Image (cartoon, rainbow, N blue to C red; front, side, top):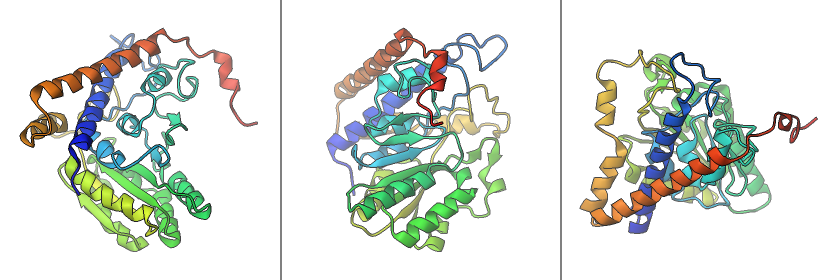
Length: 328
């Protein structure tokens, strides 16, 4: 399954929007946090986990989804939220802790929630799996269409919740696709030191579902395999597990010194940056001219600038709001 011209252009544009958005967030995040780093200071307080480098995973999967399909994501969610169609202005405002945010500024960047497009994420490792099964079971019991996609990191595949969710999805043949983003590092621990198998896709067989491994952080290959898995779920044939080799170009979080990385690793990863690689392929395949790509990139820049301006100008969330919209 190969993407059409319009799909490739959409995929590239979403990758660029995600990268530009995070570049803007990265710059603003550091405001007020120097010379002595204190994550509580500045216009964006708290932790910040960037997804730059992992954009192909989000677009390759979400190209097959619509607003009625559900995505449950991780603490590193920006690329997935953007590809799923989360409102960029409200997303930026939520990250800034503003009243105009997706949750009125209560959740911040690790707890983005947009019911308009059925997107949610959590800072709890492996949390995406159970809710995705819940969505899948709900759709199945109500005889409704739609699939659920649970994104998680390779470290989360060692959590009990992951295995419980795969077992339930396999037993009940739920319309769920589990997508593992393998960026090689669980914070500062290499996958080889924490996981007993080299590839998590082999675990799928233990739960009665297909397992696929996609090397190379390739958006086209991801589109192909994800398309088949999502079509399988829509047809009522049950879940699929996909592990994708991807690359985290930044640290685990903003402020991470990354001393655990081997010498030369980051330079090698930047040489494989998926955005310029896809840009070159679009032109080589005749899907876009240089002028068309520049126009698309300009549109991405404008979207991001508008969202950041909206967030900066919005009213901060009131402290008393923390006592509302909660269950007693």
